[in-house]
Length: 395
Image (cartoon, rainbow, N blue to C red; front, side, top):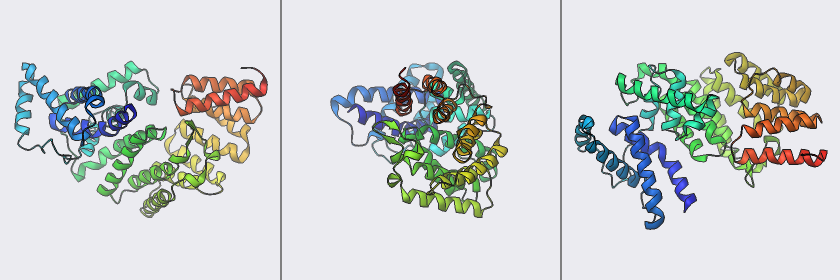
């Protein structure tokens, strides 16, 4: 029951909160109402059973909690007026057909009045359901700093009266870069094992491709996500992460690979050569047997020139290590200033292990473990540390 509740909550959070924000027009009130509804479900459903339409139950309960809160606070009387007026237009809450407002939410969060980092963080918090701590970790900033950014973003939306809607076509472009960045980050969070977030990102990617069919970067992002997601069933075994070279390729999804490559072909036909198109091309190369590591390294080099990202350089180092040896890859890694980035230390550890520099590898694995939350990745790091201990006779 606990696992089922957790799955439902993860799958429904973004939809429920998006609908509440669109209905109430207040991020904080909607989030509080949603949290209360989920808390009530946690208490009642194990006793009474899961309702036949969980999302409708959660929406109805959250709406009732919001109504109660507004009634108790006379200072919010105007909002109660809006709530009552909204009853006439609202889809009945005993159905599961209320509109999906996730696109409206993502474009609201990505309004140009907000700083780019605030746009991304706020959408991850509301649509993705990530905690402030998780978002802070993704941005490599303290949790308190991220909490302040989220608070400022919500206040700005309220003070500026930013509308909850998808903007008209002539305003789409100014928000698209931030929207794509948000979808990308939601997918990245999901790729680590949270399947509901990966599914959320894929839904958004397809919706954006339908809305903007001739934008190569939209197509490129969708292609990249489909190609990476095609390996989902092979990335974990017995609760532990499996590296690309050790994956059982028979568990890759050939239909998703084909769909991703079709989207990549469309992006290239549209003249795309932006960062998402390049990442999709790299993901397609990874699906080849055998991998053309030299071409992957060259593609990462082009992507690094385009983005200036040290994370891209880290990925290039991995490809270089495959073609020129771990020493060449390590030289690149050791020039990167990403001390709080767990993948730098896990990559460095792998290269040092291959070079036989056991003590240094152990130290790097430990640092990566310090930066990694409990889960499949941490279990992988712990196994590597045990393997090094067994070969050296020390822990």
